[in-house]
Image (cartoon, rainbow, N blue to C red; front, side, top):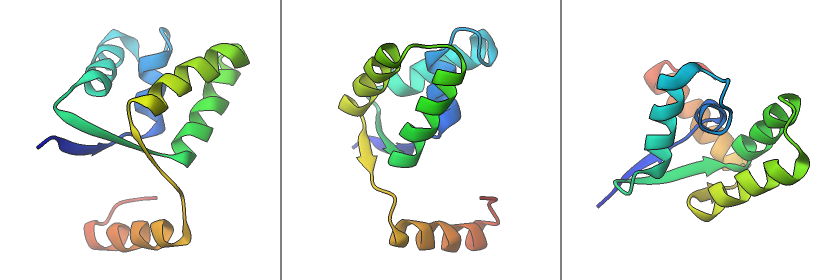
Amino acid sequence: MPDKVFIDTNILIYASLENSGGTIKRERSKAVLGSSQNEIIISVQVLNESYYVLQRNGLSDALIQKILSDIVLSTQVIPLTENTIRLAWDLKNKYQFSI
């Protein structure tokens, strides 16, 4: 059974931009996204943040939509709901994460 891995915006950006994060981060990000050993999970918020960052880095709307469409096809996209937010707060408190 594959591991469930939540991917944050930075991972998508490192994998999508050649000048972001250096070669090591880019290769690691691409490896995580391309691994059949992981079930990749992203949120709608991650898609929106990625669109914004890619646009600010000069990519065309058409290219951004192609990149993100390909990602959507190979991941599970979860909606951002009130319940999701409350769960995040609980995890933050339990594990002392920052939000």
